[in-house]
Each structure stands twice: as structure tokens, then as C-alpha cells.
Length: 210
Image (cartoon, rainbow, N blue to C red):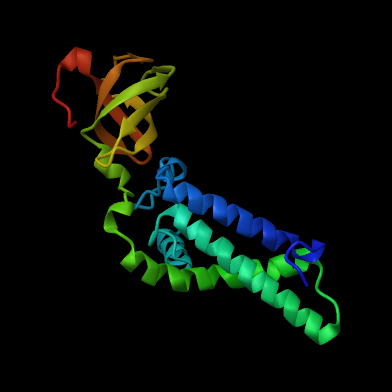
């Protein structure tokens, strides 16, 4: 049985993607895929934040950067899948359908990834973990990228966190009568749920956090 046989193609593809992620991680652009992956630690808008957080912990998500978690999952998915096909061939004389083996491997790989993510997260350099709370963006300078922000009609803004990672948030004016246009610099002054409120720096001349 070889890796490139049709019944092993899902696992061959997983290994190729894993190698691409490893190369991306090594050359230092892995944060490209993580920059906009914001998980609000407060759990706003989730029907059961405790259950959701528990599931993420079980799967190991958040213990390591997302690209590393995905590479680990793909590696285990491929390894388990190939082992399942070998076992099926030895027991029945033929491998399983590729889709069936992929389902079995995917279900099995998820909890195993969670088991390995914990120890891996403890040995990785801490400066690789740059996830921040959305709340920490308050007090930072942002730039309106699209549209006009009015009361009840938010516009999209770009803001960088303390690690230099870029986030995109929806912004309304802090003052009800104000309008903030694309290209304007603003100061994020408060947040309600997933909505930020900002003051145009040109109007108030405030000193933002750099």
C-alpha cells in the first residue's frame, strides 16, 4: 500500500497541507492566518459560553497558535487514516472507502490533537502566542477603512493590538451627532458587545495609546 493510492488521497493531501503550513511557520508569516481570528474571551453572543470554552479546551484550541494546531491535526489525521487503512487491509484484504476512512480519522484525530496541544503549548516560545482580548483594543488608534460611521450605522475600522497584529472592528461614533469618514483616524473609547465606539482624533485631539 502506497501513500498515493486513491484510498489514501485524503491523507496524502493532509500531509501536503501540513508541509505548507510548516514552511509558512518557519519563514515567519504564520500570523497572516491568525491576524483576524479573534475569539472574544467574554463569550458575548454565545448561547452557552461555558460549554463552548470547554469544547475549545478539549480540542486544544487556544493552547498553541492556530497554524500549529492545524498542522498538528493534519499530521495526526494522516497518521491515523493510514493506520486505519493498513488495519482494514490486513483484516479484510481491502482498504476502506477513502471517505469512510477520512471520517474515522477526522473524528479520532480531534481529541488526540487536544491531548498533544497542551504539552506542545508549554514548550513553545511564549512570544509565539499573541492572542489578545478584544477588550484590550479600547484606547488604541484605529483607521476607518470603509463607509461612514454614524449612530446606528457602523463602519469598518482597522486597529493594531499591542503585538502589532491587525484587527478589523465595527465602529460607531461615541458622540451621537458625529460622522466619521473613511480614512479618518479615531480613538476606540468603549465597547458594547461586539460594537466599538470611537472619537475622531481630529475633533478631540486626544492622545491615543500607540
